[in-house]
Image (tube, rainbow, N blue to C red):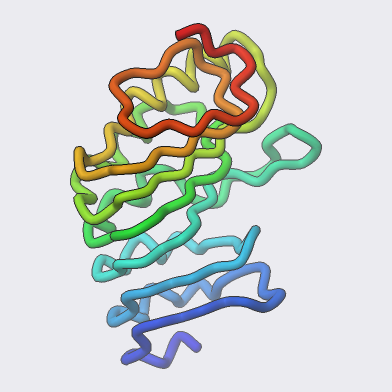
Amino acid sequence: MCNLFNLQTLISECFVRELPKGIHKLVNLRHLYLMDAIRLPKGLRELTCLKTLNQFEVATKDSGIFKKRHMKLEDLNKLNHLEGSLSIDGIGGVKDVGEADRAQLKRKKGLVELKLYFGGDSSELRSRNSTLLLEDLQPHPNLKHLVIESYYGTSLINLKSLVLMYCLNCES
């Protein structure tokens, strides 16, 4: 698959669990539609012409505990042509809150919907990290819809559209 240099759209609606490491060779890839729990290789961050990426997983979950990191939030840094909807799963497993700022979501002006799944436990450290991560993500002002699931932070700021699910510790 990695030798299909002119491939522009890749749809994975099968039981593939991991994309090949050589995916960075698909320099003309514009649209990548993935089913749940597909492991993304580091080379994905080199696909700077990518417009569609429906899911991005930064950690896997095993019985509520984050088991293994796949990508880092900062791997989104160069993907500035993303548009439409993006779901980021496993943010609760991110320990370096600086990754959120380095993701540069504020430069992704084509994103209109962002889904953030935090997950994990509700420890005080996770609560503090969740709040800092959410503040540092700073999506572009063009964002119309934000979905936050399993957020353990204590505040949410300046939102126009908000869907809350399982945010047990939210106070304001």
